[in-house]
Length: 247
Image (cartoon, rainbow, N blue to C red; front, top):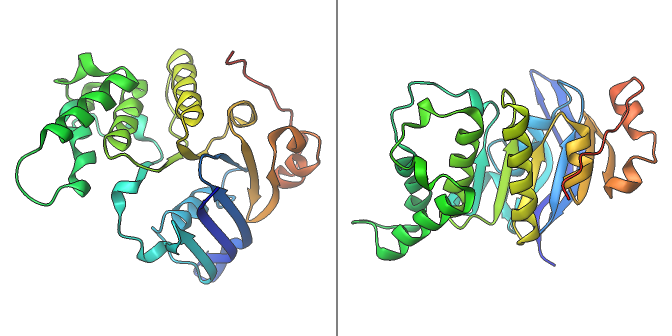
């Protein structure tokens, strides 16, 4: 099994205030890593370090075997940022146009090829948004917008899907359907890193859990995680994990 992301003794801070401190972990190909921790714990910063959007103050991050900050094959990463479900309601592009953006890194110049069009159509069908192709993204529901961003990553043939609390502001039914889709994509071999505040979602769907509050309190199997004190230690309070049935 190949390593997609390798984080080694990484520290990063803002104005000399450490936000992530001496964190080490690996994400293997085909893994579904759930990142959890209280607000302000450094989860988003760690994810941005992992996909090369930030450079560590110390330590190293490699992405597909290269320094993450210098990695330039953006088509291999599908990034769904925080609050995508509540994005600008006036976003002018259509669903099809947004998904087509996933093909840009694989093209040099000229028109879209038949292969491009097939990939775009297949990605929209895979996430169930074919009937929304002509709709403006800004007029979609939160759950539908999530699927547009996932489809864009699938159209690019991304090897890593990175999501930062993508279900904020989404209704319960759409949220459940979204995580069922992620579960299916993971079963098909896609590598996923997810930040999620619902700990039960993570322990139900993820194959690995990383519990962070500036430093790493746990990294490993979800079943082992719920048997440790890492949750209470990281959050500083008694926490209870609720599992979500996806059978």
